[in-house]
Length: 53
Image (cartoon, rainbow, N blue to C red; front, side, top):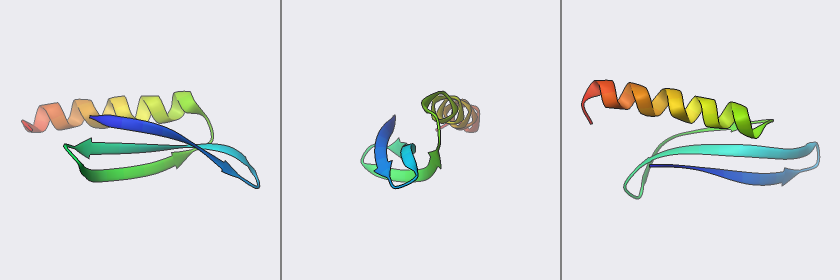
């Protein structure tokens, strides 16, 4: 499970991607654009599937 949140900063809007397992956050990363965050999450989720989680 994953989520993307919009964050308002002085430099503009940012997207924070969070990779989760249940309620536990495994990794987070901040991006300038939503498609970049979506691609990162997709890549990390596919890696996790190959691990066998």
